[in-house]
Image 1 (cartoon, helix red, strand yellow):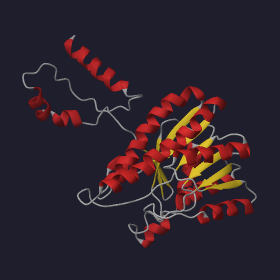
Image 2: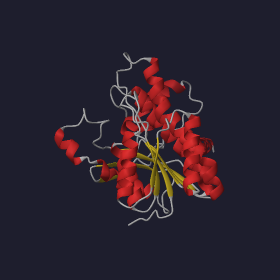
Image 3: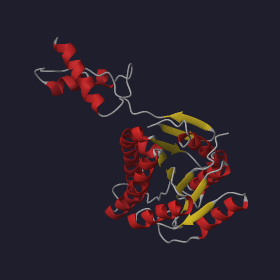
Amino acid sequence: MKSFKGRVAIVTGAGNGLGRQHALALAARGARVVINDLGGARDGSGGSSAAAEAVVAEIRAAGGEAIASGASVTDMAAVEQMVAQAVAEWGRVDILVNNAGVLRDKTFAKMTVEDFRFVVDVHLMGAMHCTKAVWEQMRTQNYGRIVMTTSSTGLYGNFGQSNYGAAKLALVGLMQTLGLEGEKYNIRVNALAPTAATRMTEDILTPDMFEKLRPEMVSQGLLHLLSEDAPNRAILCAGGGAFEAAHITLTRGIFVGDAADPAATVAARYAEIDARDGEIVPANGMQQAVFELEKAKRALS
């Protein structure tokens, strides 16, 4: 069993569903946990401290340590105050789970700009605010574990969720770069793509699926992403006791060069460009340019 004894964790959106299970799993293994939850509805409206306080009481009743925070992740000042509260209480912050989220589903034709922006603000900007607030602390102590909650909608798309999908894939981009920047400070940043029965998915899952996709199963994978031996820049998919890794790959492609009509060549040979045999996972963004220049060099030599 992985131990988090002595570690301090902040879990956002921890009053219900996945966030609650994440917090309980960490507390059960010795972590001291800040239970952050605005207490709003699924669409982000309203607010109450009751859910966060209930999880705190549950952890304390089991012999653990926890405090509640009602900070909105969209409010940078409130997030900074939450982090300061954790440091004042326990001296450090080792773990951040960016889990807070909302849904405002509509087809893109019917979606308002406000609904698009709000979902991006909560998921993307909220995760950025929380990460920014703990980043210097983690750099100074030379230790940090951060998880962004992405989604299959961000990775692969889903009808009626353009706002949610855009925010969730943006979190993968944030994770990739922060993983590179934090590596020398022993800060590892990963992403979790969960499939779980929560209030966010209750109207799209059948009763049978709802029973099988218990959120506590997902949290078991999260624990590895937060542990001493965590990977860095991984995308872990989890649901129903199954776990997979997602990768953003680059195909071998072709070299067109100075063809008489490059656009026509791309169209005619697109099946070759798209072929997945021998595809790679670039170590960073510059690897695409390196890969392309090497291909050009071979073709012209």
